[in-house]
Amino acid sequence: MTESTIQPRPELSGPYLVAALYHFVPFPRFRDFREPLQTFCLENDVVGSLLIAHEGINGTIAGPDEGLRNVLAYLRAQPEFSALEHKESRASKKPFLRMKVKLKKEIVTMGVEDIDPLKVVGTYVAPKDWNALITDPDTIVIDTRNDYETALGVFSGAVDPNIKTFREFPDWVKDNAGLHNKPKIAMYCTGGIRCEKATAYMKDQGFDEVYHLKGGILKYLEEVPSEESLWEGACFVFDERVSVVQDLQEGGHKLCRACRHPLSAEDLQHRHYEAGVSCPQCYEVRSEDDRNRFRERERQTKLAKQRGQQHFGS
Image (cartoon, rainbow, N blue to C red; front, side, top):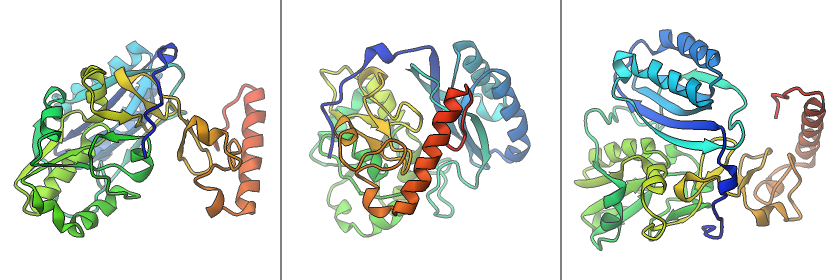
């Protein structure tokens, strides 16, 4: 299901600069780097989430232009991240509540040992060349994102694995022998990191011609003109904007605070939608006790807002 009726909202372009980034690199000192990085972000009024592990860094951060660029410069001043690339967009409101730098086993969790994009990986394809690849009849196009992301938008003709988490992707590949029926596999994700690791896995499984979209959907929406675009719908993003569309303008989706599922304008009119409590996706799987608990949380959030405070339980 896609929601191609979602339109760009240029009026939402605003004062917060957003940077999505990742970099696979050997990073044995990641534990010692957490506190200095957290402190530097806070000193520059930067918020967001960064994951660091032995294999590199991944995340999205946002803040005023100067503060965000200071953090990016600080990262690139580290020998491991000198070649770090990032993707920029804008937000009309602060897209994160706080700053979190987390230590992880993997910067993107697939759960398969010894899959290392630094050793073997698919072929990068620039956004300008992506259309030619995915319209080639010898290509199978695979979306490596989760089901709540693909519900908002996909590339025309792409295969949707319909997975709940990226950990399910390896089993899905093993259960789909038909993937060997065509010589080329083209993979994509939001910013590039999941499909980069997925291509490493596919190469490990014996697939030869494996390609992935450099910079992910975000870079495609930024660089490919709307009249040439094969993207249908909106792209889910992991911050308070919820979705972006062509030219990385903010989309029209909201987030269910009960289940974190993205909601369309139609979902917000559904009889099972209650702000902060339930939505059409989670109503049937939650109990009334759950909803009462969420109602109390929503009440506390509103009271905190009236006092000019931030309720972190929200």
